[in-house]
Image (cartoon, rainbow, N blue to C red; front, side, top):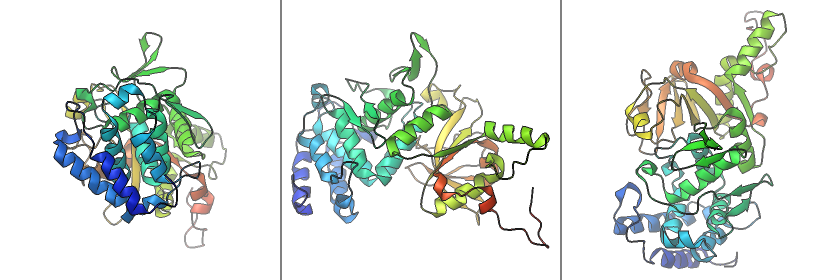
Length: 372
């Protein structure tokens, strides 16, 4: 396919691919029947032009449709070509690009990888499609914007109840990201655990592992503040060290969120959640996992809330004791600012959008001395 092809011709040809047979037994998301799934996939396909997606380029400078046709027609792992099949993979990829909020972790502990997947599908859709095309190829490898390599970790996409509403495209992406984040461990999707030999060390991503993944996928550096940094700063302050020019999670989190989201960028936050057996965590088998990664979208001062995207796409509130409100089925939620501050233990953001505590605070005046 050439870059100069008419968008309508591209849509027509991709629609022909979506009209090919769908695997007769592979479960579709949300238990959709084939007719409904195909209709929604075609609607998303037509939304690519109206949303300006065909103008987007990947890391190699190629337009989105090149990577869509790579999934539709290019070399593919024989197992994936059989199940779930090209039609499902293509349709799910297109729908994830047009509606990235539908991307979910299912009932797996891949919240951090899911946040990154949603982010790249939303902000860099042609690159997202290129990564997926690389993962489904026979080699199962793709070079990222950072120059490092993301590799497929599963050869068979067996359906499972804990996949829940997670599509096979997201499963491939997230499992590969879990492996990338911890290159010394072996993430096993069926057990939802990182293995060191035969020892299951649990799931989820630590601060360093998330930084590695985020930097690798986006090809740029992200700054991360943690609760541990704040504790060290407090300790230094007690010994008389001036820490006013050093970013502090507890002091500066809201300023960072306001500045960064106001510039149109997202902030990633880790919330330390109570170790209780909520219905969602019980279904996921992750009652002992006390940390959950979310994307912060906005600080709504007038309503006193933080607006965020929960990658679990909860259908009911599950932060016990916290007054969350679910806005839509894509996992957009709100939480009171005070509750958010109480749970917050990590924050990741582009450093160029937040100049630091000194520049972010207004200059002191005689009537309003600088707060320390």
